[in-house]
Length: 610
Ligand code: AGP
Image 1 (cartoon, rainbow, N blue to C red):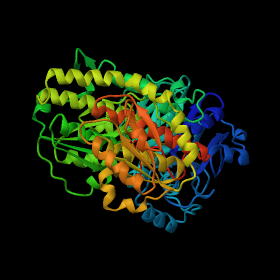
Image 2: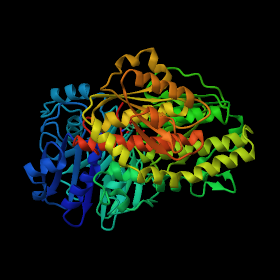
Image 3: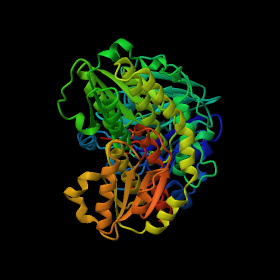
């Protein structure tokens, strides 16, 4: 839940480290710190607040050296104080550690080390690592001291470690927290994600769990926890460094909302061939296996969980496969029933969400096949599942997920087409209709984005409301949940997503003239007329109705206070089009309120702790 970055080079790394941290700030921003080695001294500056705020106080540019590590924190153990900010050091100020993750047995280790005379300065679990290494340094060289320390640690970690006495060596290690190695020219990097170092190198090694990397400026060696050296593949990343910049948009969230036509087009690209859906070889599941699937369980968290609910609707409605959606965090702690032909799908933008990884591992214990739908190449989830379908949203930096969500829906739609064909639940003509429908989506999304005026007006009128309700039915019920989540995340306004017809069983009591009610009501043969009835129910109680309706709808504008139109499409695809105005509404409201949209309070992009 924190960001870490490190560089070892032939020249001063101050700027690279500062920029790397700035790119990683979306992962945690309650405190920040850096450590450099100059001569054989550790020089550390750290403080509470965001990078720029702390920079103003401590002036990071004064730190100089050819090797350094940096950290931006999202606190787990220990309050947000300067003492608890990373890096942490040992008693002699010789070992400096930055850490992302949670050391579960830190309290036992801390007691043991205190008995041995170690002095602790912080309340963090991380400081234990620095002292454990120090303890092992009495009898071992640094690589061995790190290895021995890690073999005592239970929990998750991504670590960057510097040693004052070895000023040319950067050590990194990972277990259940993301960490990559960047191979540069005459310099090497460690980082929590690829985009943070992409302007320096696109040659990446993905560390696996319980691996330790020893980097100098012109060498890299990777070892397992037993000390055995391991050969590792160097991947070339295709994302450009520019893709991870704001490009003139006020916030990443807005840029990423506007990227959705491109993101969906890329996600479809080459996957539709002569009216057939074809996935790349990493999909890894054979037609024979897919024909046998008789149940699907989808695990995910947050926005990805909302995508999963939409997928459930598609898979049951069209491919006729019983599908259940589970919160990953709940799935892992019960004893799910798995048949041998159950497929478990994990959906995750980052591929590093701790609960989703754990749920996938739990599923694998039952011997069932697993598939991941993920946006980040080489991330943990993709490496532990049997097959992967990548969303091709490109790097998503804004903490509130937008383009990852709609590309997840596009992938679920393609997967449903493939299964419907194999299961013969749809004929070729119906499949062709579905394919024609999704091919139009990128252009249709562009028209939604181009007509932002009504949404802006709603934001201006209602940004000071304290509550709001989002209603939808069928495939658009998860979109109501997602719209409410977006508003909560970036504006801090309380919002509830509800199935439109369920409202009369309780929440209708909340409706009065101060309550904005966003109703997703595209024209369809299933629930449209019922939703009209639900709109009447809200109207009768004075609620302010903001409706999302199909472009030719004549009835809804007569009933709603505001109508935002989306182009006509297939019912299953209306969810993609309806999601976008809700993202924009949340964005504009948060912008009017002056919120820190890309880094909302208390949140971090990837939740890599349980
Ligand atoms: C989305 O806006 C949220 N920030 C959050 O709910 C997120 O979707 C969730 O943490 C899951 O992340 P993942 O898709 O990377 O697994």
